[in-house]
Image (cartoon, rainbow, N blue to C red; front, side, top):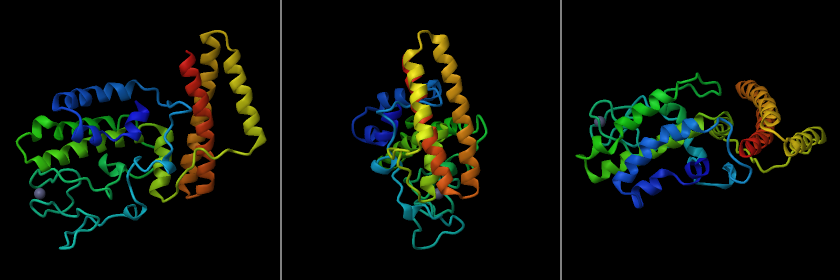
Length: 268
Ligand SMILES: [Zn+2]
């Protein structure tokens, strides 16, 4: 699911291959599917490789430098600074003045979609409500009387809301996304050359291999959760103070512990 969501934006399906009924089913299934996913899940071979996959958040760095939503100029800023229909300001996904669905504007980042400040810590439950609200507003049943073009905008926006929700709800992908918004690509494939960390990971992996019952595995799993929590906090502090080297270091550690966590999930 993770791989599918990250590597294949739903817009690809919704616009080209899925019938409306399948699309509807997919949307209805999305929330439970995403919510059932453990927060730290993606396996070693299927994790997103941000720097090598242009489909993952198709944002150009030139689009990340902020957008002036305070005015509507005659020359569009970053594509859609005004509503295409009524020229109102700050249309975001749907124009608040006339209700027209807007084309995807990549200068609207995932945090803006959810009305959140661009920072690592987000309150529990702050994503779900807004996610459901957007999906209701963008639902094909609500836009079926609109033009073909606007229905396509709705399908694209809906797919983007799913990508945004999926990315922000997990600490590791949220951290990587935040770095990307700052113009820093994190290469998760880069091997850490710290013997101490590598030794520790080897020991943990051996313990996972040798674990004979679920109780032993769950014990290691909870240790991994603690490690992930610790390095998430380290990331938040480093990112907050713009210490990006430290932030990358935290992400690399989160990635290692995450892999072990995923291994345990597969064995349980
Ligand atoms: Zn409008």
